Image (tube, rainbow, N blue to C red; front, side, top):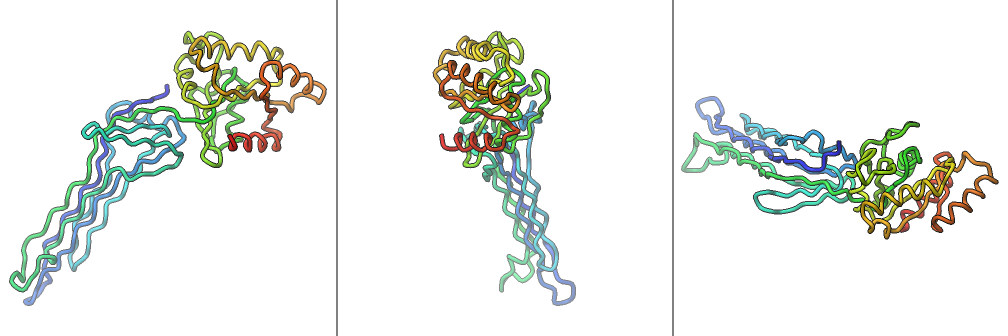
Length: 316
């Protein structure tokens, strides 16, 4: 199940306290060091759409607190930062301030909560009038933000088609995605994102079947995500025994769900062309051109076709 909303409290680390300490001996003076700074909280965008799964219930993500200052003027160690991975397209809203942060670029990393400053040790308070200060500062608290995260899939291209049309294999070849691939229906149970060079994003939408707009197969939740893509990459296997039927099955489901989906730019990808000989491929292309004039022939076993498609997509 795709988790597209979560409630998380982000808490940066508390600054470590300064230390009260004195050099030993009759001429002792203060030697207490400052406390370490609290760790920061970073948010980082990932193409893993399952990244919100651990947050099905309200969770707290916190960075490490700074350590207390040491003796002999030693500073306390800074707290470790924490990096929270959120899916690309996450909209993070601070419920207390209303401030909204969006993560729209894969691997984008932002500082979200700053750690608290460490307290000063008693050495910092020594003066000509106060030669033996017996106090130090506590550390300051880190920032805390109470947030709602809503996932809104952001993609330039949406791979659509019947199960086993080769969508997952294709996104694996075009991008750095690592999508499970097998020769049976519904291998892909959740949408997957992959990033092309230049920042263009492809969404692999689980295979649609007739009746998907009524919740059949993997259902209506994936049709919702198709609404958010800019261009549809309609995959049809060259092995199909009825290209027109397969094409119209998907187009009908899109139109039944939302007629506006039929107005999106669409490129027809004839996949697995390596399974046909030259004569068969020519005949199949002629038939496919009656469905859509914008056609690309591609196979994961044909490096040149993959590179040609990648170049086309990055140029759009």
